[in-house]
Length: 175
Length: 158
Image 1 (cartoon, rainbow over the protein chains, first blue to last red):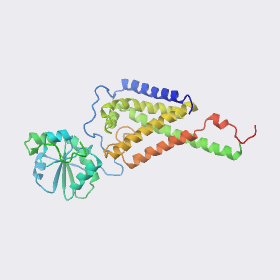
Image 2: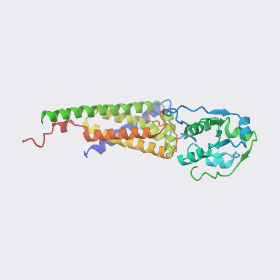
Image 3: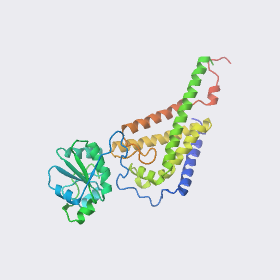
């Protein structure tokens, strides 16, 4: 290996770092080191997931979702963190955050067998959408209706609809 | 050097030059696209869930580093070019590890390889990264410097 190679490499990398920091100082959309808050869920999702057509996910109102409670053909999934799930969740919901492992997601899809409707919720409508879209894509099954709960769990809880609490039984493989 | 050997050398010089321009151009494009929105790129990095709280630092540094390395890869003299090849290899290896990690964990995120959005991570992303790494390895192996091209053939009598 050329003797000067490490020093040249260090100079190139240092140049890149210095340029990056300088550009970030004047950039209108600069990233702030001290105050950057990583997203709590996978906010970007797969916007252009190759050849897969973006799924159409419905938005269901509180009343529409409440009417599905107890329906054996419907399943409700909680897309929030395990901690938030343990604090309180829609009665009968399974826990399935977007960061869950492929194994956990596959297990959830297995539980979808025989179901006609899947409702996903988070702390907001937007939080549940990537998870719903992913489940729709992975569980690609004609006739399966995938929806999100409009307003998320806060709206459900405020409306005094059925809730339960406690850790999820399936959280061994994910958080 | 025989005529056939010279022709082979010329073909190699042209092929390696094209490969260098292609990799350098791709890297410059990726750097410029990411540089448009450092905040958005930080979110893309955080989505990989590898130390997400620290995502701001690579978001600020990586795009400019890609640009510097791409310029060195295409325009710099041979010794600096070799250093750039090593730098690009380190970058691509890091990207491949991150993409593989997200894919293995089943995290459904956009690649972020060219700024915001982009393709979802999948086998094609992994293949593309491996192909890029192979291209960098080829540059390391066959990037012909003027000094090496001018070296006399060992079989030629002095």
